[in-house]
Image (cartoon, rainbow, N blue to C red; front, side, top):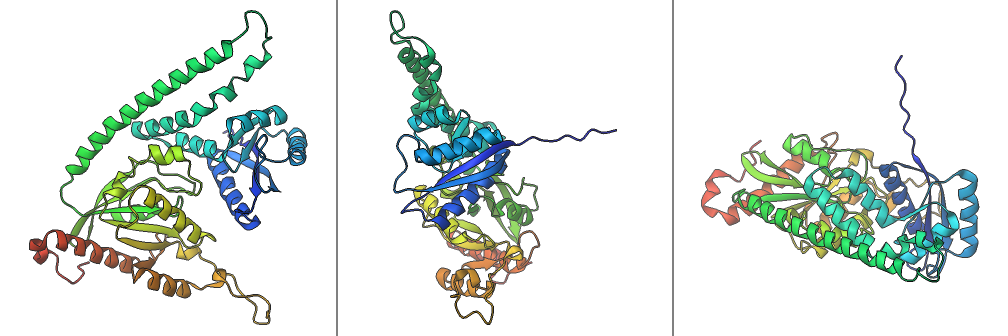
Length: 402
């Protein structure tokens, strides 16, 4: 008889704020995403708490009344982890741990944890470790809670400070070492990119979990890891692809996310060199996601941060098979039509006009509209190639060769 293995998930609760800059609808969106992040990390969300405040409480992030409500729930339901949707300061984290007596992490820490789980190669692990140490450094003082249990007085003055300074020096040395290691790997990767010749480079970019790796697998007929979880892919994968008779290089990169930790943007900038050096970007979007326009804006902000915002781009609206518009009853004279009620045809018209035709609506999973997608990519890559090598024009005629 085969025993069933049951995986126990950590029981967690989520806490978010409703502020002037983040209304209730936006707060719910962020908490939905935080719940998906928690699930990806191996947690189970038992309950959510939100509070309307003008600004976060500098000591405990949320108010004392709400904190007491959370404490009672944590004790009654044996909650092991409380996750905050925004980054906590070292002091806030320390104060909250004292009150709730359980593990306290924030969105940044959660994302770093997922990255640590997902990192497969030495390069990805090094980048994640660097981001974790840079996150840890300003929080070291808050971690020395065991020293508070020691008695003060003769012979007990100063050891905490000495220990903390020792740890800070160790962490700073480790950060410097990791940065040197990454710089060395970057030089090696730069040589590798230079050795790829003069082929046109195309990079898949987009929010996390929009189907980039699935699309990569279909286009390149390769086997890149794809899963319905956030940050399934951390390492950049590069494949040589031929559409018609035209070869080019296609790279799949790490997905972006709203409120992406600064430490990760900095440490993964080198991985995103594939994006910076690409000739064409395929910006993949999950059209079935309710907030896909916000996701587009988030990706564009990150592209701007790494200096890749002005590159030629095709907007690839994926998952049309999963798209569902909200319907308005014919007898409903009150409800005003919004973008949520748009049909796919209306979205196509909207984005075709915004991108001057550089948009395509597909399903990578079901290969819907894939011939049109391949033709559009072929035309764009061919134009870049002909501009770069006009003497090769006769090799790639105007008509698309299947």
